[in-house]
Length: 297
Image (cartoon, rainbow, N blue to C red; front, side, top):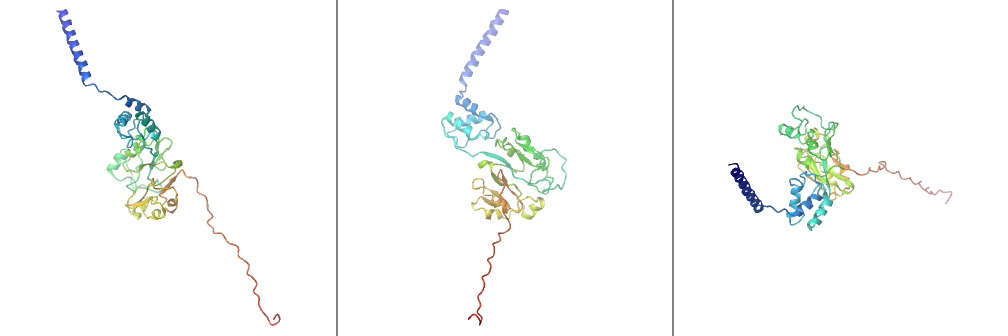
């Protein structure tokens, strides 16, 4: 009986092994070896900034795509995409590097508190309950959801201003902070030459008087910057100015004319101090007037 049981179990195991082998061969998925090669050159951040679930998903998308025009690894940038293009023998379009910028300058001094929030320290939760602790319902809530979402330690809440600050050298432009902000005050913009950028640090769409009452640093939609720009880079919509980073030539004329200092300039050299007093030209001495008298006639 023991021998029969052993033989029976062995036979069942052998039949099962054969069935499993046949099933695995029938439903076997052949993975393109190029996927692994592409994944090797990717930074491995798995941040999801490319729009795919991790680097493996992005590598698979690159291999199966006809071209790489709409595919970009924000962490690796153009350098990584060029390596991917060489592996896949495809052309990669060059893209300008971007960085996160905070479009809110509502500091504690400019935007004083009107109430006290005692709930969970989360921007997402607080934004669902009410507009915030200040008179501006568009500004930063300051609870640090963006800081928690960043895997690269590139953004922190300033304890004095209660506003997020981006560390450019660490920012990979993955977009995690952009998605985490319920107020949509964080934007990915072109780094620009020498990391110089000009942007409107405000998202308040209220009319000028209301916005200025809520925050002294708010954009009031006066239109002075739009009139000053000779390149058509500034538009006013819903009482708010916006600077197109593609059209902007970084002339900085709009920064000077903004009455609330809502337009920020980053990484520019200090402005040259110009003499405000007009130059006084030396007056010429009046020439003597010849007169005729009866004696010298």
